[in-house]
Image (cartoon, rainbow, N blue to C red; front, side):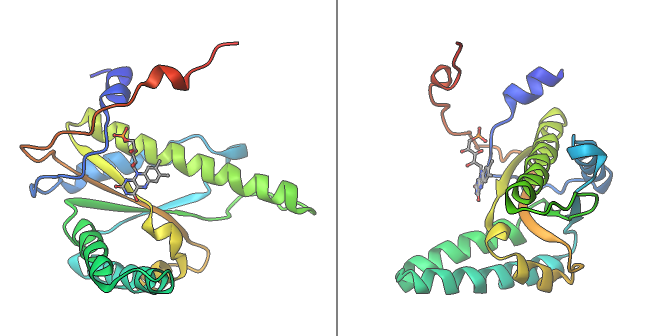
Amino acid sequence: MNAYEAITGRRSLRQLSTVPVAKPLVQKLLYAAVLAPAPHHTKPWRFVHLETPGSRKRLAEAMGAAWRADLESDGVSESRIELLLSRSERQITGAPALVLACIVAEGLRSWPDQRRQRAEYRMAVQSIGCALENIMVAAQAEGLASFWISAPLFCPDAVREALDLPAEYEAQALVSVGYPAGDARPRAEPDLATLIKTT
Ligand SMILES: Cc1cc2nc3c(=O)[nH]c(=O)nc-3n(C[C@H](O)[C@H](O)[C@H](O)COP(=O)(O)O)c2cc1C
């Protein structure tokens, strides 16, 4: 499979088989991540391979508690909260392979004003998107499927505490990776031509 085929073949797939993903394969995907382009020769991210059931359970519980607090303050019904939290917990504890992506400020410049400081931080965010896409495209090339989980972005302190991560780690996203479940089908693609303009 060439790069174009891997990119165009990749689709988010949330129905993953229970077949484990071998550790060397996960490491290969993480190597693809850390080769991502980044602003002015920095590496403003760290990746955490959540290998043990214990770390996943702690993460699921901490994120679940944080999400519950948000949903309760939004006035969401208890039955809906239970539904959302149990699905989220299953995605985390049941992922064949699970990677957490965090931003760190390493190498990022300090600016005297907010405009440039924000732009600097956004460059790190753009860069972590490249790294996560590298994981997902590399997974596709290996016959794996994946999907992005943005929940950690909403509760970075809970994530840091649950996983005992260094203070500078700012959680951004999880990627779940596994072999496609037998009957899984990605969602239909919308009309993509409207997204591309030529002037
Ligand atoms: C920043 C970002 C956040 C996302 N968050 C989630 C998420 O929390 N849960 C999920 O199932 N998919 C999530 N996705 C996946 C998108 O839903 C998916 O990429 C989109 O529907 C397009 O489908 P495709 O990936 O199959 O092309 C996210 C994707 C991005 C780029």
